[in-house]
Image 1 (cartoon, rainbow, N blue to C red):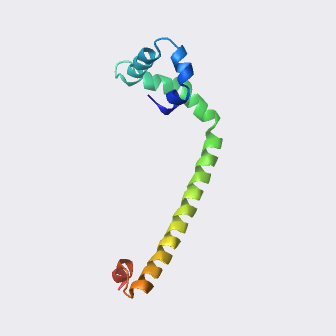
Image 2: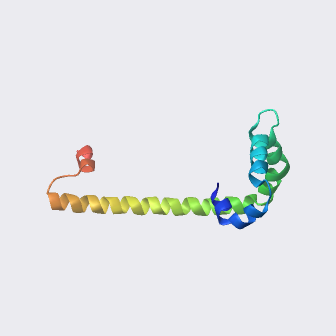
Image 3: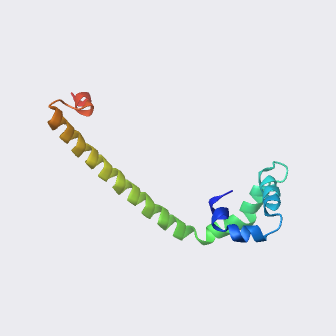
Length: 100
């Protein structure tokens, strides 16, 4: 059972044979003879993706920028913690030892 099915459990319960239909649909998608996933992609998803391509690219770039900033912040924090640990212990950290 997926998260969406748990959240919409009352709707799923009202659809007779929901899990049987879902199973047949998944078999259709994954079976090599039916090429169901390719058909679904070519006839539906490709068109939707093309329509919203610019929006998707914009959001992907925004997410990548946030990830870069988070990575830089984590590196800065790690350096600060490393320096604090070094000053408390009075010994160089493993990273400093590699630099020597």
